[in-house]
Length: 61
Image 1: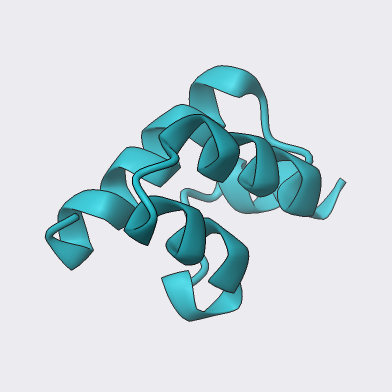
Image 2: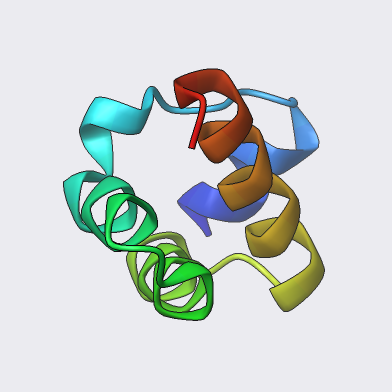
């Protein structure tokens, strides 16, 4: 429920709140990063993919 509300309000948690996602991205495992993000937030596949791509872009990964 929280993830849905945050998505609706277009509020994005800092990547520091998703260390597993950042770790997977650093290791080059984007699919694992998306899966971890979905597990942590309950986001849809499309939303998780978009957010993981944003995190990767912001960090230059």
